[in-house]
Amino acid sequence: MNYSLKAKRCQTTIQRPIDHMWSVPTHRAAVQNERGVALAMVLILSAIILAVIAGLIYIITSGTQITGMQKRYKTALEAGLGGNDVMYQVISLRGDVQSLDSLKESLSSLDLEVVTPSTCVTQQAIPDCTAIGNYTGLAAKLNLPTRCWSNCDSSLTIDPTNNPFSYDVSLQLPGSFTTPTYSVYAKVVDTVLGNSGGEEGLLKHGVVSSGSGDITVVSVPYLYTIEVEAENADNPSERAKLSVLYQY
Image 1 (cartoon, one colour):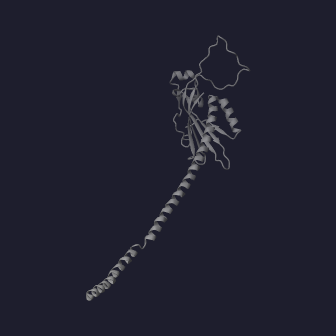
Image 2: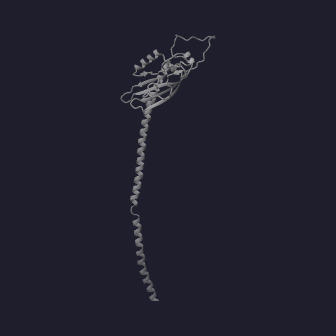
Image 3: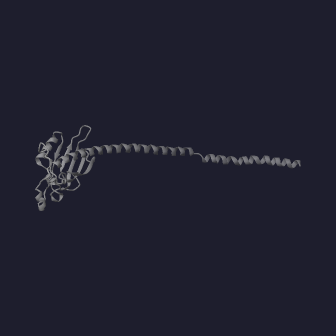
């Protein structure tokens, strides 16, 4: 009995060191497999941070560029609206040469230059057109319907560089040290005949009251379709275009 107990105890003491020896290599292998994880995490986090910073820089740069483009477009648009107002005054004169020269002189005193290179004439092949009148230049577009135009450019395109006759009115808006000079081009591309007359001012000192025998004429205004283009004189890519339907 005593002999067997001692043998079991010896066997137990011998097996413990063997189990301990097998467990040591397994722990070392696990430690070796985890080497480089910290470096990989740092690289991943660095890539994410760089991507976020690049995105922020792109957003800020794009926002600045878009703001500049909007500012330049708004400036060109304001120049186009100013040229459109001058075109309204030209239309009200109905192509009268003396009145148009007077308008040019008035604008020249404000450092504004207006030229009218229109080459239109009345379509002689249509009797109805010649019955309205034989007009030349811009007056043909302002007093005749579109079908009565001859030698006129009625396209929607304005190309002053290759075709100096692709517009009816050219206006130069002078700039300053900080504001560029803008060139404004306008032309009438369609006219619908009416019965309204040109602006002649007040002919009498007073107004005559209508009597029972007067016949009131129904006013039918002219309709003009106008194309306007304004561009930076130094950089034509900075421009704005307008299409206007004007009733007079």
